Image (cartoon, rainbow, N blue to C red):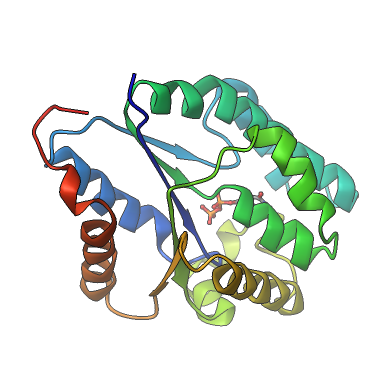
Length: 213
Ligand code: TYD
């Protein structure tokens, strides 16, 4: 079986990842590809239960290491149950967040450092995205796009936390220039979409051919 393509979207809360994922889906479907969309934390029955624990505002006592491990556990289940089988079947897998989120939020935001990367090597069994789109928006602007009343446990953290996360994303982008492509997300939707689609053309423009994997 041929291996599919694994694409992840990353960036601060409110960067517009979910909207762009819809456009990416259409792009590959128009090439006759089968697309699986997933989100983190979540994407399987077990991982969605872990998501509830992670995002519940009442869990204010959660230890930072506990948080890192639950994100990794949710990811391990998603990789094993959904992502690996789909890639093995030649499908296109698009994930709203993946390991880079843990590196940025837990590694930088919570100051847990390199242990996050190591724990996640185990969670993903070494699986890496073929392409990561970093939707770059200043965290303050991203935050203004989310209604205050719908913020989850992570989103309601202080701005200082979100700027540390943002620094994490910028470092990841600098350290992985071939895998991670930065898209300026502080622009009208259509312009962001154009940049996303032209990046897909650059990376995968040659895969056209209806129904063939
Ligand atoms: P997400 O579902 O992307 O929230 P939203 O759709 O509202 O942007 O992610 C939930 C929160 O979890 C988000 O604030 C980022 C955080 N997060 C981490 O801290 N570590 C991780 O590994 C992941 C995947 C997400």
